[in-house]
Length: 270
Image 1: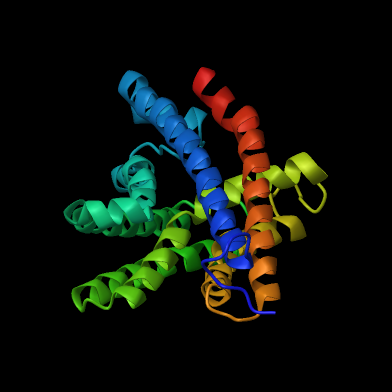
Image 2: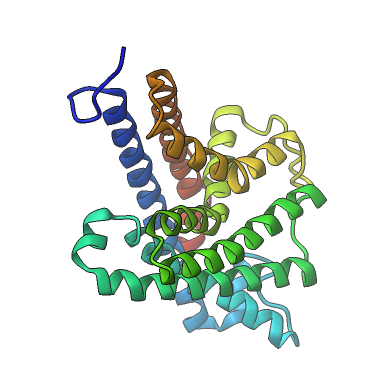
């Protein structure tokens, strides 16, 4: 049986609602993350200097490493503007009503996303981080996707190929939020499964790798699935995609609860 996209209670409507639920849950997480960055890093930096950031991350400040410290500051503080600014790009009514704002906000988002990615990759190479080589490779992959997607998002916008521009902009948005996806999903895992599949001493293990894949690679594949589900006549695929988006939203909300109570709130109130 075929469904009309404009009729009530169709799989296509279910997919639209699930996309909105996903976006709202991500906005909630982004808002909490930005509050954490402002109160945790911003206020600490103003009151104690950059060296105070080490209470939040023991590799945030390294004495006599001005370049690395600058890169970390760029990586953290630019994220405050980029995170919420990027989400504004996805709101259709804002795009339609405030086209000039959409263009200039998009340019700011592209510049900040690339700067943050370059800074993050630099810090990973120079200072290192937790996890194993595969986890590091997936994180680097996310940074490269940001840079490549930025190039093509700008290129297609200038060519006025708006369908291609939207596709590349979504890829850019997803890749730029990979770090936040990781935080939400790893804390959702901790709440549901505890430390199963996680070596807490080295922060490695099958669960960590799976969450890394679901943070940096899988979102790009799901975006393609959603794009296909919006057009396909196979309503079972559309319904399955809607269910998947709703499930991801629930995972995000569980992870947001976990990371806020276990990490972000204690960090800013310590």
